[in-house]
Image (cartoon, rainbow, N blue to C red; front, top):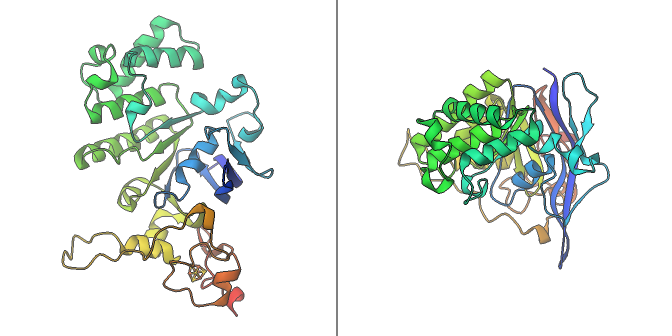
Length: 333
Ligand code: SF4
């Protein structure tokens, strides 16, 4: 499968009064057409900043490293490095054109005083050749397609008039109406009831098949990843620490942090088993540990290298790799 997105050496710092704060450090991954990549990690791990970098949506105090590359590979075109796009016109391809984004809280995506339909039509007028009549017809079709009943009536309603699940569907309809090649979904199910969560996940999987698009699915919930993703990348304090096929990583987690995330999940087959939390808290980005970024919380931090040398990725199989000195024996011997 051809890679739709190739993120290479993404590093980003924010300029603040306290100085430059590292938010993402040398992150690389790719997503093929029709593939779902889950990006997991605790709050503050840099998942959302990474996702927003693909659309260059981070605030103005974000400083990218010079070797950051985000290639968008569209059929029949030369690769586009999104980091090199300059004008608003050039950026259209990455913002609502080939790439769309949905958020945890749909209210943040819809303007409260403009009807859902008018917002969908406006987006289509910007990104497609539709006239206003065609855009309205297609918007209603999309609302219907994502399972919103009485779509023509909902078209004229405002976001606050819809239930949480329906708002989420309307946001997905709006994001998909421009037929993006990549949908970035930032915690899209976190604020929903479990039953609605399942409906939204099923809907997204159906749409991947129907539209052949790729999804970058951001969540802190490994259960959602297991149900949804083909591949998973685990992030901690701005760094990727393990990545691979979802089955490999979840069945054979090799980085102590991934193992900790999995051990912390409640087990329905043994309700008496105590929950095992990962000790401590994610450090402040102002106090990033030297060496392995996880060493201040790692139960296996026993080798000197852990505190002094940043571990490289080591392949566990051709599609699964993790960055830990205990795997990379050469660093510890
Ligand atoms: Fe733990 Fe050391 Fe591996 Fe880091 S490199 S995860 S500190 S064992």
